[in-house]
Length: 421
Length: 152
Image 1: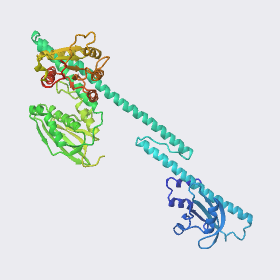
Image 2 (image 1 turned 135 degrees about the vertical axis):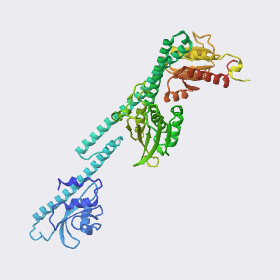
Image 3 (image 1 turned 45 degrees about the horizontal axis):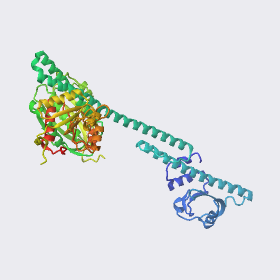
Image 4 (image 1 turned 45 degrees about the vertical axis):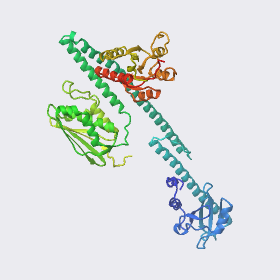
């Protein structure tokens, strides 16, 4: 019995049913009795007649003896009046007692005093071992309960509190959890610091890059403005080229800073009306839309949970691409959204140049470009920003395309009505 | 009668605190370009700025500026330290200070306002836009607002 005892102890509360199972599992002769009584002497588990006996009080003679000593054996009677030898042993932690009884009739005649003593001793031993099994089961259950709490806390990234464990293996496991938690904590702190360093670096880099850039651009402007007359056409072209390169770098530092800033978590509590987001975006892109004569159809859009500023940037980058990669045709752009399994899936479809299928995955990588600056200006950050924004909103972005026919960019955003918290 | 500086018939004095010589050059060029009527003084670090304001050597003859244009990132004493020193100095604390920088960093903006700057301005990269910004800035401080009077 001692070997299988822990199997019954894996629940922290050890309900009555399990106590009873513990009793039933003991290989006792059929007419013997094993039971557990609480501190008041009321039966709480009974191997043989559980339903009938549980809730009843033990016989007064037994109760009287139990009140006097922790463990002993007495002559007693079954509820039906048949005489029994009964041994009991009380647990010091719960004051519950384990009782084992055997019928006196079966043995009485042959029994001499010495044999009775041996028998009584055996009964007592049985009761004590049952009690021991129960005691250990409870300790193991408590230890494992403590350990599982630690494991749970670790999994949730919380600081774990080591609870005292009752046996060596559990103690060692507990220490291992604590060690793992410490390492996790250190790794987390290092990561937070690295993120802060990176963000600081991007600010400093952007400032330090922009400062001389600003000088070059300003000086070129003054050169053009004040001394263009002193230069020939070649000289003026050099100024124009240099100015173009500086503008490009200026845009690059801008976009890189935008991209780096997206590291900060989006405020994902706001309900944002995407109709308003797209309306704002169209105002930003007013000049480009007017210039290209683009037709833009916007179907009614939903309210989503997200960061308004980031969503404007998302639509702005996608629409700007749809306007840009049109190969001289009049852009026709369609924006719509539909609810799919609790998330809104948006589509921005165009009739532009399209994308070859082997590039569809890689276009969202930072600095990834498919065209030269002469064909289509750009720096390869726009879609990377889109990808990052959608990811910060817990969604996914992708594209379908047919070369020469147009592209459909799609992304998912959390629905405002669904409780995402 | 207290009135904006321009109506008092006195030429405004602006102190530019900036370590980048090109930026100083461009600021002067923008003022020339817009033909702004003001005297631009320049120092290239924080210590010199405080010495200038306190008329310490070698600035014994320095005029008290009506407006300070302060850069943040400078060697030795940076813009934050200068800002703090100005607001702590009884004789200087009412001087308007405009932060003029190339960096837009939310933390820097908050920190500067907390230290008591009057405005935070990010210089445009485009020269024409920058010149227009300076024009607006000086119009505000010298034609619109009433400054603390130190002439008496």
